[in-house]
Every structure is written in C-alpha cells, then in structure tokens.
Image (tube, rainbow, N blue to C red):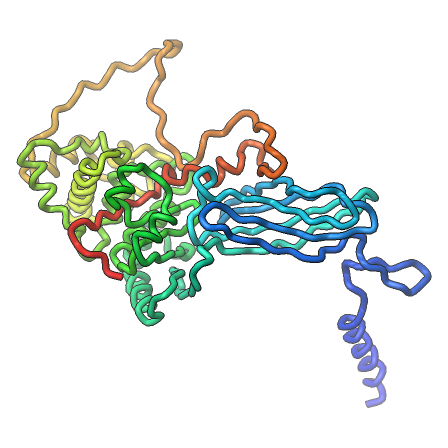
Length: 446
C-alpha cells in the first residue's frame, strides 16, 4: 500500500493543475510565476436576425495594443467554401465591430440554414486571436421554433402539436426508404424540413420567382439541395416526401458534371406521393386539344402558371409510365448514369436500350395521345465555325468569374477566389431543387 501513495499524490496534483491551472490562452511571464491574460480579449459576441433582410453580427474586444484588423469568416450549410469579409469598426484599444450579412433578395438564404462563423483579430503589436467557430440556425425570430429529429429527417416547426409533427415526420421517414433504395443512398445524410403555417409566412420566406407566381400562390414548397433542406407550407406528408425526393436527387447527382432534367426530377418527386398528384384531368384535356409538350422540351420548368400545370401533369405521367412499365431497376440505372456525369439522353439509352424520343412515343401510345412532330436534328457544326458547338447544360453551381471585384468595407469575400458571397448563396431557385407543389385541386393538410 505504501508504494501506491506517491503515484496517488502525483495523480491528485495533475488533476488539480488541470482544473485550476492557467488558461491555455494565457501567457506565462518567465521567472515570475505570474500568468498574464492574452493580449487580445473578447468581451462580447452576439448577432441579431432581422428576418428576412439579414443578420447583424457584433463583436466587442480589447487589446494591450490598438486592434487594427478584424476579419469575419462564415460558412453556409454543408458547403466547403468559407467566405470572409471585413466588419465595420474604428481601430483602437477597445473596439466594437459590426458585420452585416444580406439574406434577402441579393443574398437569399432559406429558413433553417445553418451558418458557422468565427473572427480573426490582429493588433498593432502583431498579436492575433482566432475565435472558436460558432453556429446559428437562420429562422424567423418572431416565432418559438421547435425541433423533431429522426434518423433521416429533422423537422423545424412552430405553433403546432408535437404529436402531429412527429406523426408526419415518422410517416415521411418510413416512405423515404424506397427512394433511398432506388438511388442507392442507404447511408445518406438526414434532410431538414421547415414547416410554415400559412401563405403570409410563405410570402415572407420563399424566394421571389416571379410576381405572377406569387400572386396566384403557385408555390407551396421549395427544396434547396445545396443546403439539404426544404421549406414547405403546411404539415403535408405528401409534400414533405415530394421535397425530400428532390433533396435525394440532388444528393445522388451531386457531381458538377451531373444534370437531372426537370421532367425527371419532378416526375420522381410526384411518383412517391401517395396521392398520385391528381393531374389526370389536366393531362386528358391536353391530349384532346393536342397540346402536349415534347418531353425533350421539358428540360427546364416553364414560367407561365398554365404551362406549369401541364408540365407537372406530363412529368408525373411519363415517369410513372417508366417506373411501372419498365421497372425501378432501369430507373436506378438512369440515375446512376446521370450521377456519373452522362447526359440524360445517353443515360436513358443505356438503361432502356431506346432513345428518349422512342420512350415518349411508347408513353403517348399508352395514354392515347398523338405522336409529337419531330424536328430534324441539325447538322453538326465543324470545329472552327463561329457557331457554338453544342448547347451548354444548366448547372446547379454559378459560373466561375475570372476576377473578384473589391467589396465594400462590410461586404463578403471568399477564401476560394473564384466565388463571391452572392455566388455562393445566390440564385438558389436555379439550383435544380426548386419545387412547385401545385396543390390547386386539394386542400393542403396542416
């Protein structure tokens, strides 16, 4: 027992030193036994969400020498790019800085987005301090938001019964198993759903697509694959499944070389709705009037509300035909080929052994619709001609500028010089994940 006394005493001393020893950020004065505080000290850090216009970040700090430089770093969602900017402040021994992040039209951010941020400070003596990253969830602060978390889905909501939200979340989670199996995403990351309660909330929270679309309340939900979240008006399991399919499509085809045409993206989202989407009447009317849109022209969604309804009706019917008549294995191969970077036409040829035009002809015959008029394929343009040698496919990333203009004092910059803050968080509507849930024929559950 005596042999154990010394090691025990040493252990107690080590624990005491760890508990009551100097702050690791502090500086020991040699030979004095005195521990000095760090040269730069944070006094206060806060932020204010002015939804939906922006977020104001404030920092108060002091130093033994005048603080001359403060840099604000932030990263949005799961994006790997870190953006930086310079807060407004007056250099001195004690400073109060302010950084304004635009989350409105110019730098739109959807509700539920997580923002990780930190600061780097430098004083006139050359001392530096980098703060630990902090995280906030961007939400409308007028409401008391609550959270339900399942293995593959997180739901943010307010002023609703937790029991109702849990029931809807569990139903959606169970139904997503078939989607993950189709896409081969067994270990995919959970998505986030932000549930709004009425059109007034939606008007404040949705991105502006067009004044016409806003006036007729055409949009009931938007999915943002780059942030792995969606915003939906109403606690509607079908709507939640629809949006989650968009997120999973985005996860499957996440390569910069991958592009999923809108007819396929929306058709798959509607296929997994229990309601069947309810577009039979619109489709039948279009067949009678011989005004179906050629599938090849449905790469992107139209702008007029009446065209959007027909677009959805056709996408729903065509994808349902492919899934029910050709089987899910072929569709799984289509998505795998697109994820690998092949064009949709080539992916369909590889999976079904026939072209998109042939598949459309089969589908039209199955629904009693006339065959579309085919325009001749133009001759290839020889190299060296002034014409463009092929169309450029849309991408879910913005174009990379060659240079980055100097921002104003509080404007953001990017650690990746090819991007600016506006490019990173801007034009999310074109991100391949905008969803139009046209609930014009049935009341939204909520």
